[in-house]
Length: 294
Image: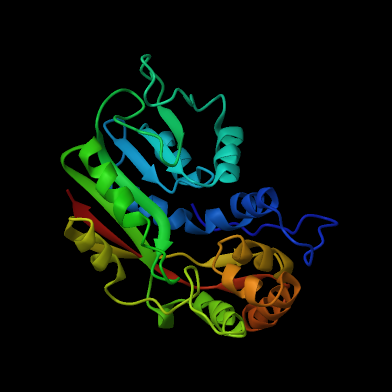
């Protein structure tokens, strides 16, 4: 799968404040697919198929789960974003065989996939078997504090998997290999305009070389290989690019420090070097994944 150029919705007001539902739709319809090459590369390396029992932490609106299910895997997704989970259900019901039976239900799930609200117990895969693959496809290493909630989530998830299960962590590649890093610097600059200046979770920061290894160490995981994947961000126009990028949450601190209209204006200006003659926007990026064992 490759990134798809997505057109801005006719009549959409790009300067209007985005509610949670709009933001989740922008993520699902525009931004999420930019990471599809990362999903495919990880699944190829892990040989994901019918024998795979996968737990997806931070599953979002479910694209990575859909790709794994298409390969025959049994998948369970957990996310704290209710709007994204709702879109995952809308996207996948009923053909993909979702089962929303609570994990503590006396009636075990018999279908190939399941969605759970973050915090629900998930003692086994959707078919009743322990997990043998845990994935985290929400890239870390680009915002302050973005791994703080991940470490306890991993510690809770590992006992639900078989001994020696594989855990895959993903993150942004080196800033010099990611064109989007230059645009994300707008988020840091605008966040610094807050008075008094403050650092807060979610504020953009440059990716560090050992971000993934640091998370693995704190979660008690043993690294067992890594890889890099090209994930260019392609948009049909600047308006779609702005909406997609703001749906990631990496500009939230900037919006709080200024206002959404100001952030949208400056992000649009920062995108101009990446706009091609036909109006499309193209930004080459490299993402990294770390393979660990429990």
